[in-house]
Length: 212
Image (cartoon, rainbow, N blue to C red; front, side, top):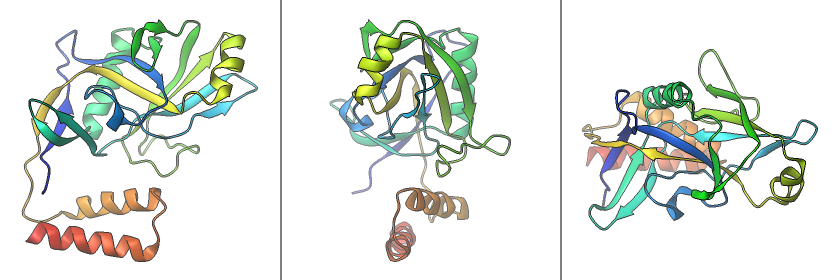
């Protein structure tokens, strides 16, 4: 059964809408509440500078959700929404708000966001060359050496996860996939390390499934 798909969007005029914090996490998005996301991408650690880098959110990447009120469904962020929510995150001066595993009582002090960008035509990521265009990547400087040595270097956390408030807008499925849909699917399969045969099979299934 095909699951309904929703875009998560923000209202730039509402203070509470958008990203409220970024969390250091050890779990993928499927294991946390609907408004808390992560991707099982490993931290990229610069030991000399005590800097950790990771994607915050991947554009046009479906994430499974399940709630009592809505059942099972998928959510994703568009490139445009990711850019807008990053802008608002800076404007609202929340860029140094960090916690552990989405626990507001486990705030991480002496942590400074020193880099934030959206992958696109102007900026690419050598650390994450295969993530989708429009994805958000960030870096934090860890001032506390003990925290770096005892927590970050312990591999307790594997990536970043955003949390906040978003609106759900259902995606209306077209009769058949567009060229952009197929291109995005191809990029995702390549990033996942699929073989040529697996890629061809997956694309055929997508085409046949959409046309039925």
